[in-house]
Amino acid sequence: MKKDFKTIYLDFDGVICDTIKAIVSLYNEDFQYYKKFRKIEDCDINTWDFKECNCASPEYINTYFNQPRFFKRLEFMPWAYEVITELMKKYNIKIVSHGYSPNLIQKKKWVNSHLPGIEFIGVNWKEYSDKSHIDMSDGIFFDDSAKNLENSNAKEVICFGDVYSWNNYWNGKRISNWIDLQEYLLGYRKIYLKF
Image: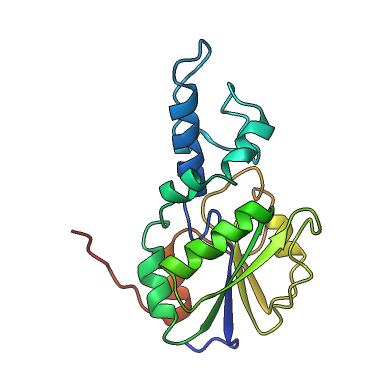
């Protein structure tokens, strides 16, 4: 299966890393003794600003993205690391992610540590509301945000992951997980065993 592009552009939060899991973990730890606290599971989240975490304001939740402890809790989405390692043999891979400066600096460090050799492109929220200024015309772009996909000039755009409020109106192609993504790009499914 030949794909007509050279580069794969990947979003970071919700595509490579399970950001929701890390944020929910921090919230549950910080607010567990509050009167109105109810433990939140990853699957409870469906709002961009984590309204389900009712003991914390959206501004407070946003501070998590800039904290080193957030990056210590970050985990790859299931099979992301393994599939990215396979994709690197055939494609140029770039990570394009939104954030404020403290978040972007730490994301770049995380990428350099966990995915050496992959270029990280940070998009500062203070300057850009989407990723449309990044030239992706030589590639395919995977993001979980419909807004970012709609405004991209990539040859192909695909919504990745579960359906959330920030992508539920997307009518284009969807890929739900990394094994399906591998099959789409490489033409085969490989099962990875974890011990």
